[in-house]
Image (cartoon, rainbow, N blue to C red; front, side, top):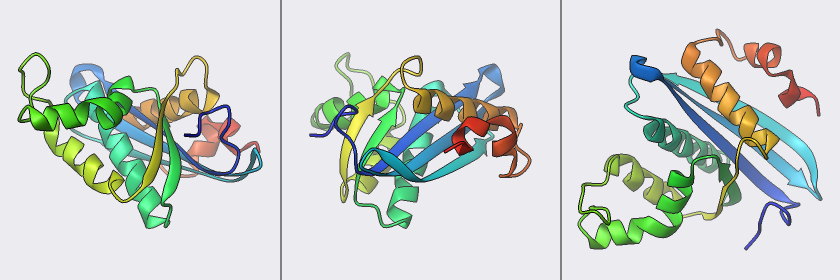
Length: 174
């Protein structure tokens, strides 16, 4: 299994999700990098604003769904998926089989929230080879950037895709 330290060639997806307090406004982002021998040969950044997001976890899951859909559309079958959401990583790698065995109830007997999104993630991920990674935004600049883009998308700062360069020039410096 590849880890951050050993990942040198292939596709790296970094997703971020955001929800703005009680407003319900949310945003998602994806930074997709193609790496060859530790060198970024291509980077693409996507964002989307959502009008009704019930929780931060839902925003992170929407970001994961969007990221995997982009990967599939681009023909990517093997990737590293990195996020600051431990919930998404553990849900996909540790918890889902237990939830299914328990009738989509967690270990406390409560219904698993956002089951619809978990099922979508499972369906998309089923045909892919994914190394799911958690990383703190404090220790991973790409995760920090993905989260910042998602925050700005939720706030409605971007009026056009070209605004990404204005507000996040570090993503276009390579």
